[in-house]
Image 1 (cartoon, rainbow over the protein chains, first blue to last red):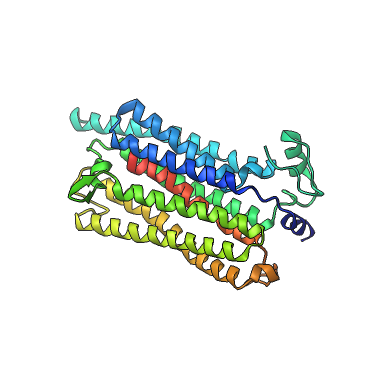
Image 2: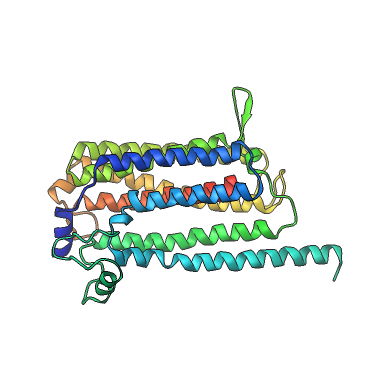
Length: 112
Length: 236
């Protein structure tokens, strides 16, 4: 209890400017990612832009709105390292998806 | 990087500080409110749930030979007689970001013990969330009228409906729960529970504005998930 009290009594509040900046940036980035669809970019350009804006938005929200940038380093690590497991899972399922598609097409057209 | 300025709990910067924090006796994350740490752990587990949904969607979409419905046509909306692609989704995104911003400010004003500002901003956040849920309900009913079902739809691959209802439904549930808690916390802020240190339900913990930050973490997470859904489901 002592610990938590100390923290909340003098918890550093941040200037309002930083929140407004991040807020504005999020609007602009969302608008850009909407424009990706509006102009119907296709292929590599489309999905690299989508991913770029997505990660930028997610990073801004986590770092500043969720205060992770100011959070204790141990907590930051506990939260972010498990994400690598998700990345591995995605990689596995991309390979699996391709294989499923291949075998479906193969047996549809060539037969068993 | 991290803020080592918590009084009495200074650590060395970077990895060494982290190792000392993790290896220290009795308490990890010293100086971090336990409720906040627990909310983060919960959000981490929730991240895995949403990841599983999105990965399932990716795998389903990648492995079907049938044509996937074009989201920018499926989710188009007529405005003044012209079909605008993704109009409703764009509005929903902006509403959710707006509510995320008001929540961030509510946390800030809470820590400054500005009761009224904090309360009004939480109220604004709750109304934003309510608007979002309303728009989602409209979107669902529109698609259901057009014949989208979990097992079939008139636009293309049959899997589309089940992924759509599952993912947006689960996200919408999170938003709805968030809205309920926002209204409760709005009442608690206006009633001054956090100024007086009034006890909450089921807990001996004295009320404190850190609770507003904990609620804020949840709300920002809901916004965060929407960022990913927007990218993968609606834009891809």
